[in-house]
Image 1 (cartoon, rainbow, N blue to C red):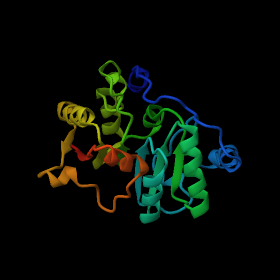
Image 2: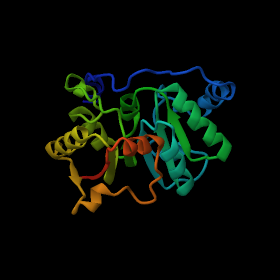
Image 3: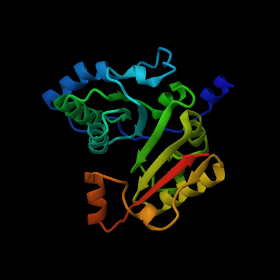
Image 4: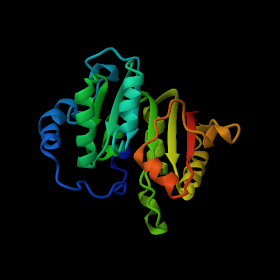
Length: 232
């Protein structure tokens, strides 16, 4: 069963891996600091993921596609008793996050710089308290929708690694992706949407740090939705 799950084909969920040339300090972060924080998927994952962190953590939170890292850094500072795993294949974004983690001396952050599905398949069953998928690439053209990270296969992955009662949080300013996610989670059957009234999904999460991407969306007239699903 494990081999079957790992062998299921997936699309490429991200685009380019690198943008403009890295500055000297950014390049140094990638060369020297990334190896310290990067999870080694060639070894077995510990049964208790708190063992991945050099400090005592009580909860484990996974952020897929952290972009500039503003949200992940904010949450890591806000809740030092939570261990954060951030996934981002874009080199420039990873360099930015590493610089902030180093500057702030955060000890509750680990990272992975490749396909998040590889990490999800590596993680033990029922090991994650929360998964954040915030402003993922919407792949707006219909012919590319199969590349959206929210899919039947990936929802199976989420459901497997989330602890009982764990939550999946999704934010987007693209209406078609919001509707896509609501439909897929409903049809999957393993997730319960927690919204009871419009304010529950139109207002940002508590203590939400606005990101540059979100500010750009608002300038361009796009509003956002913030969806929370609990593992059934």
